[in-house]
Image 1: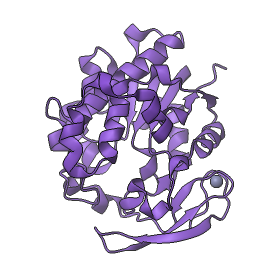
Image 2: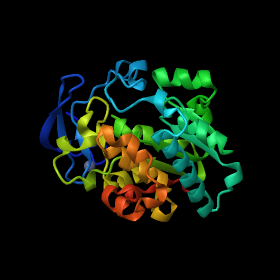
Image 3: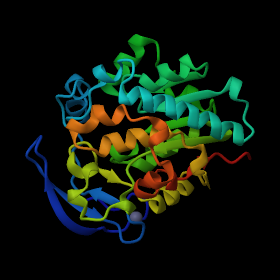
Length: 290
Ligand SMILES: [Zn+2]
């Protein structure tokens, strides 16, 4: 059984969940020390899990549809623009030169964020594995091989990625190695500390074939320090409302989704929603300058 990847503590076992996709019963646990939630018997047949079916919405996550996402005006496209704006604002506030920003999108999928960032004039590359890396390569969006990426990027993004990682610390260490001194790591994931009911009822845990690591801001900050990054707060004023909008859209029942993506951005009470979903509670990881 898995121990907490951050604290190495044996988690407290909680009610399991049966996957409606694979019919596998997944054991769940919560680390008492850092409030991380864990699938204790995660799948590791990644080539099987993340094949073309996964990206076409016929895999373990029925809400994934990268084909629809690529269409203009999709909820995902709105989110990608929001992320580009957010990391640009953070970079400027940290004294980085926004006109020459180099961005690496870790777990880039089929490359939507990389494409959006490039459209906005950012020098962006994507990184992924298996089928996605093949597609990124074909589209010319793929980063060079990992050893060549050392200290090459001002920003590393991992958008809805860290909940998929069975061995998150080793991947976070690799993400950190790609950052230039003073560069930063920006992530989005579900905030497990905001969950009111049991882990197996939370929408993030409903797809345990692929979502295996559920982060609390405390676990995230601890993890950042372990991979040698400094923990810096993410002020909500720098979080673009479009990221918030996407979070809300994602949490809604499927049929209400198109409606939510049409909501006027200005009508969304960003602070209230952030208080509920805790998006800004996840720290930025900053590479120390020396
Ligand atoms: Zn822990």
